[in-house]
Image 1 (cartoon, rainbow, N blue to C red):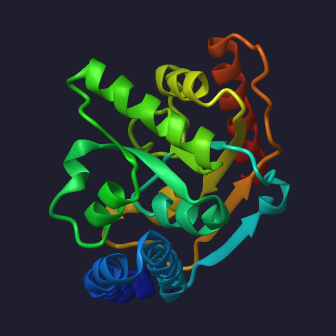
Image 2 (tube, rainbow, N blue to C red; image 1 turned 180 degrees about the vertical axis):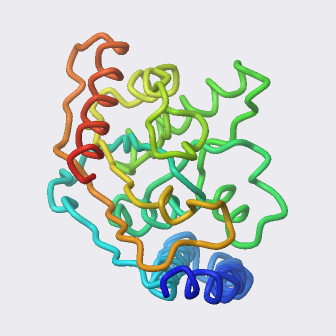
Amino acid sequence: MKNILGYFLTPFFHFYYGLMLIVFHPIQVSAHFLCGDQARKKVVDALNLFLIYGLYMMGCKVSFKGFEKIPDKRPVIIVSNHQSMYDIPAVVWGFRNHYPKFISKIELSSNLPSISYNLKHGKSALIDRKNKTQAVKEIFKLGQLIQEKNYAACIFPEGTRSKNGQVKKFMSAGISTLLLAAPSAVIIPFVIDGHCQLMYKGLFPLKFGQEITYTALDPVEPKDQPVEELVNRLQAIIEKALNHNN
């Protein structure tokens, strides 16, 4: 029965997801133009909440855990595993009190309703993966922003999505640059669990009834730890949490 529901409901889910992005785009632009960035942010928060609600259409059981652990009045570096395009709404909504920014490939900064406008005007780091100098400059600028404003920056150190849920080797360069620019930042390991299983056959069909959890783990103080050791530790923490959930 779940397989049948997966085939039947997946097209409705994708239609809903795309519709939300299209509907909220002019609302976001208008809010920004008429009322400023905070109003635009509230629209983005609402959009991502609606996108998360869409998972219930697929019978998903969604839970957010551990967000009460995040320190206030500190810059935050969110270090997360990366499973699918559905990861982003969880970060935006879960960390909304910290105004999360992203490190994103520059190709996403155009032609995507709602998403591209938010990346550009939300001051995320838009990097050209073929231009290392440009990428470092953008990430450093993002680090300076979160240091100044006590915002959050989200990085997926695997670089690309894991299709099978196995965490890929974390790369240290982006985290190192953020820490250099935001020396007072605290790191929050963030565990996304269930998106790979949801997309067990790609975009069609999605799995009906999948349990999905978004967990903010205990804060990690970078202190004076060597970056490679720190990054390896963060990967181990996230992998342990994933294995415990499964």
